[in-house]
Picture 1 (cartoon, rainbow, N blue to C red):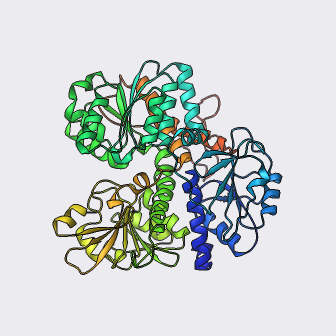
Picture 2 (tube, rainbow, N blue to C red; picture 1 turned 90 degrees about the horizontal axis):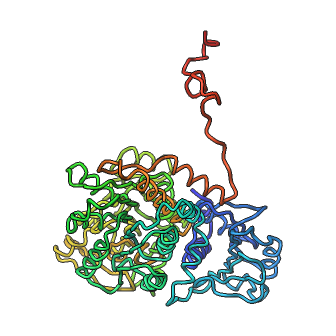
Picture 3 (cartoon, one colour; picture 1 turned 30 degrees about the vertical axis):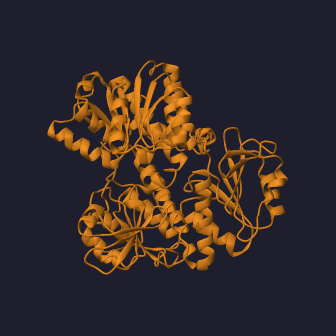
Length: 567
């Protein structure tokens, strides 16, 4: 167990809340970032333990990405001054994490300007230094320009790939449809495609649309078919209007628009180069269509790229979904509304131990909860055991859990029978996921009643029992509909893979057969190497054959030397 579990529960709860508030204000990642904590005592040590357990890198010396301040404001000011200005293009975020009183004197840094809601820039101190306070809620912004600029600042890998597409003029005049969650990071991707020469058209589902972002893209000259207020029929109409713009390449999230294209606009398929899909749940139906002979264009499996799945699914979805659930629970006033509020020392059941389940379990453990994993794949279940988690059948796992999180992306994972096995007043949520991952339709058909107790929180009676559970966001994709999606640096990697898929389709789409295709592994390696370079890190190149390419090169010599030199 991580050191955080030995902390005072109140201090641990404060540290977890501070990290969540930082993430909500910045939409930045915790894992992989270099950090230092300024201040003494248990507050500092517990915060350090929580950050480390989530995968952040403690750096007592040298440059850092995050400076967490918990003590005297004068000490914090001195630490920022000693750190100096970050290199051009890099960022230092100074976090006021004072538990009882402010630990940062904002006036010491001169005039500040709003970089995005909850984040202050201090241009007169040094370019690239920003201030965040975890003691106050970030204000909402009716405009999206600042969040889009902030996201773009932290997406260097996608910027570099898009710049190469622009330099090569590979996208000039190509019509690209973007059907994804419409928020600042997707706006950056759409603008990068436009800047590279593409004719970009955007669609998003109503519950995945930030209207301010949609307006900002329209102001930038993009055609956007999205509104948060339209009903299901309106969403279908908007999606068809986007398809009627005849995109040659379609970038999808969930494969809903790709499937709608086949169902309602099949006449457009011959004019398309191909598509790209970035989710596990979206690739499943596309592969089924390919097996059935119903898929009629090549699709690049962006989700399966290592630079996507190993980071987006685990570190991105893990952080964003868990934080979103706890942020929603913060709005509950009094334990009468939610009798089993998950907290340090409590128990969480994680259903599914793929990459998303791994990330969810890691974050919950960092926040001080005991995790029990339910997994039908025996290899993954054994993997969870080796990671230090208890493993049990799903009904056993949920029976004593304060929080149940489904991480499978499979319909009816939390079936009516599983709901009946849940502890009274357990909180039930989905990490990412698909429609009906929690079987709310079956529960409703059996007589369940849902009552709102706080924004996006409902008490749902469980038919056949005298108990109820607390349903988060209707069982929906909570990190999208109740938060800002995955952290920016994570989406930088995912969208870099999308851009690599665009290049792959442009260069090879005409020769690719109908079906689902993996991304070029070399693109994966280039994206990861670029991300490492942005972190100031480097790795050795893979060892290959001798430079002369001879048959006796290291990669090709299979003779054993265990019994002496080969003859």
